[in-house]
Each structure stands twice: as C-alpha cells, then as structure tokens.
Length: 167
Length: 106
Image (cartoon, rainbow over all chains, first blue to last red):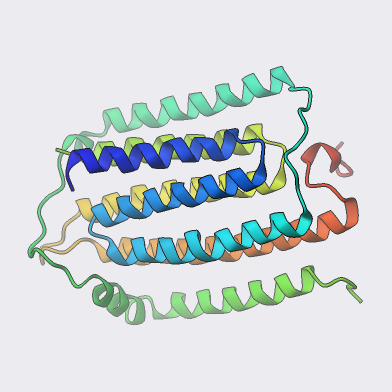
C-alpha cells in the first residue's frame, strides 16, 4: 500500500476514534465508531490480512454497531446536558492517558525492528481465507470449539439478563 | 516506505484514545465503545506483527491472525453481555451515568 493511502486511513481512523470520545451525543459517537472501524479494516487489508479486514467490517461495522445503535434507541438516550466538568478529574485522566502514550512511543522508539519495512511476500496473491481456515480447524480446533461454547453461553446470558421478570 | 513502527505508533495512539475515553467519560455506552477501540488497537499491532514475520514459505504468520479472530469473537460476546447489563441497569435505575451508580462506593 502506498504511504499516502496508509496515512489517509490512519488519520481517518484516529480522528473519528477521537470523535467517539469527544462527542456529547451517543448516536454521533456510535456513527464515528463505524467510520473508525472502516478505516481500521482498510489498514488490515493494507497488511494483506483480507480475512481479518472482512471480519472487521462484518462483525464490528455490522453487528456490534447495530447492537450499540439499537440500545441507544431503546434507552432513548439524548445528548447529555452540560454537566459541570470536574477539571481535576479531566486533567488527571488526560495526563494518565498521555503518560501511557509517551511510554508506548518510547518503547517503540527503542524497538530496533520497528524501523524496518515489511518483507515482501512470496506471491502477488495469497490464499488468505484458506490458510486461516486450515490453521483454525487443525491446530486450533479445540480453542475454536471452546469459543463456540463461549458464544453460546454469552447468548444465553444476554437473554437471561435482559428478561423483564427474572423469576 | 511504511515501516512496522508506523503501524505500531498508530495502534498506540488509538489505544491511548480509547484509554482516555474510559477514564474521562461518565456514560457507560461511551465507555463500552472506548473498550472496543482499545481491543482494536491491540488487533492492529498483532496483524502488523503477523505481516512483519513472514514465514520461510513466503506467507504471513497466520497463527497471529487466528489469535486476532479469537479476540474479535470474544470482544463481540463481551459487548453483547455488557449492553445487556446496561439495559438491566437502566431498567433498575433509569440512568447510564456512572456518577449516579455509586451504591458500591466506599
């Protein structure tokens, strides 16, 4: 992928990711999250991970976002009124996040391999889905089934939790 | 040329944005969204390492992509359960604001 496209999509993802946090209106936050996830899917595809990129669009931009928007609609949340901002807590939170970011950047700065470009792949096209699938159903068959049970348990839990009368 | 470090820096900034969202916002839905941002930042750096570690066969390291697949599945289940808890909480308290949910506060 050309550097130009990489920076376009990275900037898109970061700006709308920040918009998720900054927006007062939950619906605007959810829609910013969709754009952020689409930019992230484009970055996955730029890394030749087409399967992960498609899964990202299907699961996040599709299913999870519908869930978020549906809950916002169901609870009828409006933009929160301007609360008195607790400046000490806000400045503290931003400071902690900034310190974390500086720490991450320092670690990346000391990481020698971070300055290398990506090595080329063998062919121009790769059979991404088949490779991931073969690994998933051979080496990682047991974790895959455990994940299936987890999703089933989560489904049952969600139904139980959101039942009106728990008796 | 784009290096591995560029992807890692973008991923780190996204993680910090999500972390700031969890710390700063008091709306539970926004906090769940910020959690998703952090999980996705981790996924981005994992996929970047997968592409960086090209195997002798000339293919990316697919073990990492299977791991990312598992993370996405668990994150989707987590969001579903979190939102169900949010709905149950809203029925009981008519609020999604963390400031109003302080019964367990010491």
